[in-house]
Image 1 (cartoon, rainbow, N blue to C red):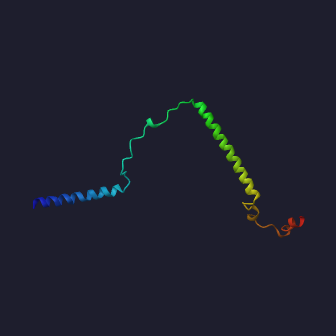
Image 2: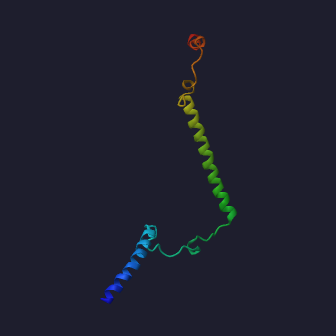
Length: 106
């Protein structure tokens, strides 16, 4: 009888602690081993001089930049030629006396 009473007291004390622990966990802890820690052993060791590699990469990136600016300019010009932005349609209407002047000139 005494053992049963001690067991009930122990359960009464432990259950709130167990429930609090489970509530705090909320599934954010990693349930798997992510593997060994990452360190500099996996980093590549440079074997070329910095200046040569930098110049090579800068040349390539400058070509990318030039081509992208040229393509952007081309697409902007084509959009303006095709009236994709509808500038005339977004402006308020002209005065009545000037509306048909452009049509009469042609």
